[in-house]
Length: 168
Image 1 (cartoon, rainbow, N blue to C red):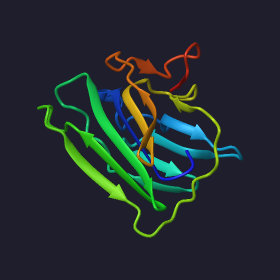
Image 2: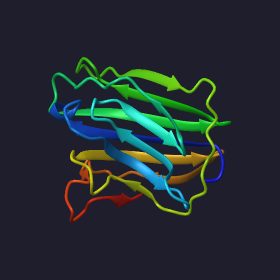
Image 3: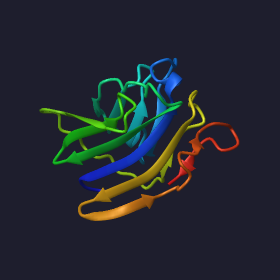
Image 4: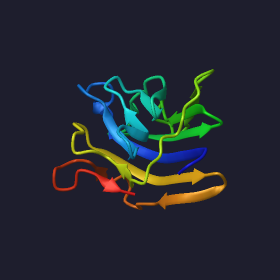
C-alpha cells in the first residue's frame, strides 16, 4: 500500500471484556519498514477504537457492550484519504440488530503513509483479550489488495501463544 487506502472488517469481543481490560488489544496492523507501523487499528482498554497511520491517529467513542448477547460485534471502516484519517465504527447498542454508525475524522492533521513491505496481521501475542475477526478488506485506490473472509463466525484471533496472530 503506497497511497490512500481503506480498511474494513468486522470484529467480535466478549461483551464483558469491553472497557474492562488493562491494555489495548491490537486488532489489525501492518508494520512499517523503518520502525513503528504503517497502520494499526486497536481496541483500547476503555473500549474505543483507534486508527493510526504513522504518527497520526483518530479515536472513536467507546463501544457499548451488546446488552442481550454474550458477544459484541462491531464493524470498523478506517481510511486515509489525501492525508486525512477517517474512522467509522458501527455497533448494536440496544441488542436489536440495528447498527449505529459513528464517524470520527481528523480535521487538519496530515498523515504520511510510511513505507511497508510487511504482511497485514490480525491479533498479537501480547493481547490480553481474545477477539474474532471476519470480512477483512483493504482497498488502495479502487483496487482490493486484500480480502479475507474467514467464514468462521468470529473464531478468536490472538488467544494463545500457539496461534497469537494471523497474517491476512
